[in-house]
Length: 219
Image (cartoon, rainbow, N blue to C red; front, side):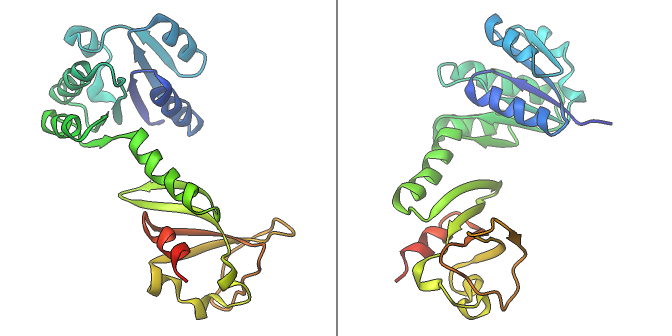
């Protein structure tokens, strides 16, 4: 049986998550108070409905308790609505409630009323993008959850010609190389301890958020 998700709020964040879930073969029921957004979502998701998610009876009709995950992605201009919606989802027995926040206070309130997880996409993206602003070698980053990132990184000059085992990246920086993309051929290789890095290689690494930046800043 396919997993089922309820996505409430179809702004840029909510719609992006809905599309990504559909691409991962999740059945998505999307909800928004804006008819235009609902019409747009209806071409992508399993079902799209237009109603106010703070309306308890309307929300109950979409059976949040039957969904594997419920995402309250209501936008920044409707904090009160996001808090009410999160509380209602919890009261209705939703198994897992994830809510979007835009401040620390908002996040604390959402947690108190029932959100299992709170996300601030603008802050999280901004913090990750700052690494790319400061370090040209960081080509891209993707969060894996709980502060762990997978990053694609150009090989620093001081690493060129060295073997992975000699660099001791996990020990020195908390960075683990999980793949190497060869610059000339584009071939992706699983790294070995005696893999030598070349100047045009790209390393795919897993680490905690600050680790890659620290590695780049080290002389």
